[in-house]
Length: 161
Length: 139
Image 1: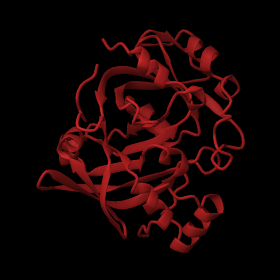
Image 2: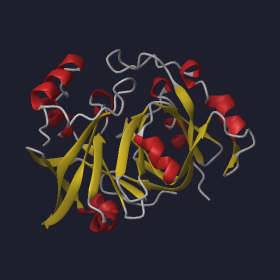
Image 3: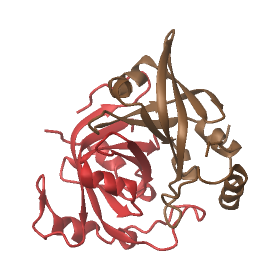
Image 4: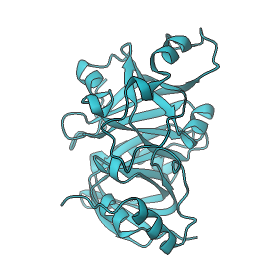
């Protein structure tokens, strides 16, 4: 079982608090990949990464048909955060039964904690020419991490966890 | 409609990219492409080290689709997803991964998220981009 390190947890928070921009990488069931940058990121317990479901389109469709998913640090990258997290994801949307369970976390716990992420952690550091006009959050993506590998120069593919 | 990348897109791609592939069952793999060999027309050629390529090799051999985004600060400043089919050839100590682009998307959060851009003419694309952004990566 994977246990994220304290350094990983420190890196997996919103950029404005010293965390990271991450890439959320999914695939359709027949193997067409998709990659999109995400600002709202956090962790829960020792093996789960959370991403806000805001403006997700293909990512959302992919997760609904195929839970296999990767989160990779995009920025900053060259300060020891050369990590790729691989596992199974679900988009816990409003309307899920409160006691819905995803590898040990409940829908109510997730939505109560991160379901209004724009107000919880306003995007103050996001440049004005990138920020959205209005927040619309429909849920929270929860990645149950099963493997972590490196993309550090010279060590790409090395298993970390 | 064929894809023609803008000079700004090319400049950001040249700073390095996160590449995402998937095997034919939909299991994704990500590697970092630090070096770009060439960009011309609708083709981007990445120069991967053996370890960078090792992560995606088995998936790419069964499924040619490659999606990529710009790494580091480019993930914020160049909100694009580039998608196409890739083929790899070994050249000495490096692997040249050629991606022939067929799809281009905006990933800026908000009203343009998911907007398909390869449906625009090149002039329309240049104008659309320059209305939003003009900055180039620092050398």
